[in-house]
Length: 432
Image (cartoon, rainbow, N blue to C red; front, side, top):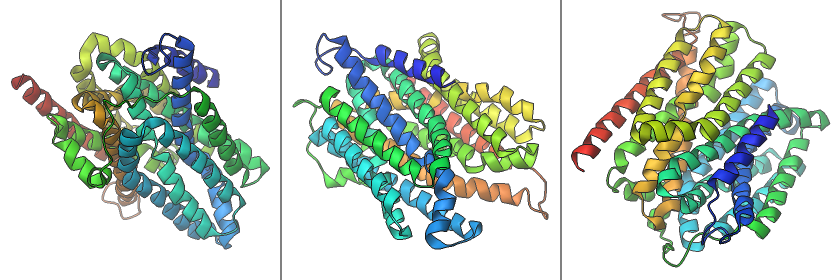
């Protein structure tokens, strides 16, 4: 499985790299090294949460002397603070990269991330651990800068495909993080932090030697505090022709998608009586399917159907899959639905591609920062909404016993996203 992941990403690095003024002129090797750095950075960002999840309950209990129930409250606070920082600082780092360049933002963030993980691994204070998660949320917001880098070097008709490859890298981190964290937990609750520290430092050193700058004098934009905060950046990006409905659809799609990390383990244990091993296997299957679709199959789908049909079809498929999850009664049905659900996930990179083409060259970092902030809001809201829905429909006095209710809600949200996109494409073609 891990060999397939590495092969897909390595092949994608060759496809995305187009030697030119940004990536080492005619040297394709330099281009591949630069893109490899970007993809590894995305993987590390995605691993940052999952890597420490397996050890977090034990670490919190060790630091505070709490039982598991009380430790879970601290775990929620740590997760929320991480997502909140991504919301607040995604646009700021994106705008900073538009002004100062992608290279310094990416490299400095990786170094700070490495120092942060080292401090968290050594600390004996829950408050320093909380501060570390806050700093970690800021440094992980560089995912927006990585996406802006990809937008810089991508031809207009290949942006959606290349964003799909970045999505595949995120899927790889989604798989590798909990897997590596679980293995390293055998060496103690601090070991995953030291591993994350080593990965961040190693990738920063690699990037120092291979990563060229893509922001030029033509595309450099002065830094503005008004546009560096999430609300100001959203207002500015939302004024771009055709961007507002795409941003709404992106938010709705993200809100629906985060039903997976919010309730998947609870849903599958309640509905199918799965143990943690089966839950892990199913999540790994989701991650592998995302990699195969966004890293490979999207390159077949897009040329055949075009971006608008692909994004509307993807949301439609996701809507139907969530509906099927809601009423699934046997565990085998989940593994039949997982490939279909991953096929529907082509929507996300295509939405990113459409928005990237609508934004000017000097605002790519700002745009990706806005998308990172929107994703962070969905990350904060979705767990609250989905877990509450699960609670309402699984408690003893539930009006209807329905463990799959959160997926039915996600199906409705995805339907709303599809309707927004249909209205947007009609307006688009009427005005052209």
